[in-house]
Image 1 (tube, rainbow, N blue to C red):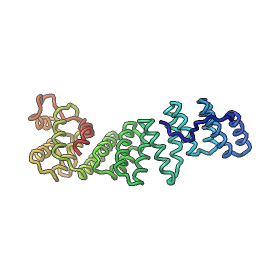
Image 2: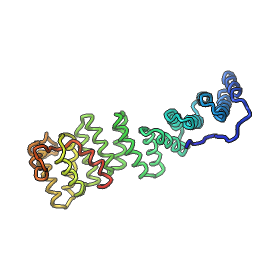
Image 3: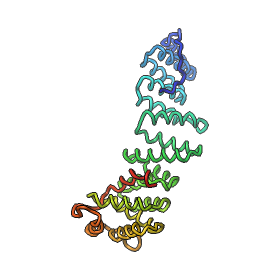
Image 4: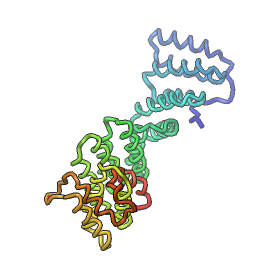
Length: 308
């Protein structure tokens, strides 16, 4: 349902076209603020008469003459939404929200929420909602908004992805989805060292348990691509060996590090595929076709709710 700013149930007897003409005269005579108020009134009249284009046009004039009033942009967005133009409504709500100051946080939250409901890909709106929740102490809601925003930003290759991701991980180091999304961003940029550091910091804050290690091993043995999985496997194995006590899981971790030929200073070389295949052969139905997968990250994201 639209927000409903300045809606009226009764129809005005005034002619909105005449009111808009008066508004233009006021603007031409150097009274843009009064003109904006009249244009807003004209838009409301056109809307009551179901004249969509005329109402939108009047509201746009009001927004222009008011020098971008957030409240008028909210009215414009509501009009677009009521007429079914969700893209234009989302744009108007966002324009209004961006013009609001700290004292208008509640209205900003309302407008950004409308943007999110109307546009499933609105990453920036989710970042704004996360920041507002942080200011109000809503940490769990902020964590959710940051996680959703980071995923959308990465997929769209937005230039702000790294900044948002680093901030989100600093605030919520135990969130596995955030850490893995940020690691993917670093890998896409060819910066493997940063990806490994991101994962290491996450697993230091939220060590993997036996269930996660079993899932990593199981997933690695049943897929065919080689790539980013090395980062996840090494980071998880290192972290588990520091705190984990399950003998079978510790043995798996040790074999993972051996198979990946990790050198003493913690750096990693290209893995020995034959050694990896041999290691996982004991669990594979057809060892000749099994290699370590580059999709371990996807598995952990999908399973993070169950594992974390």
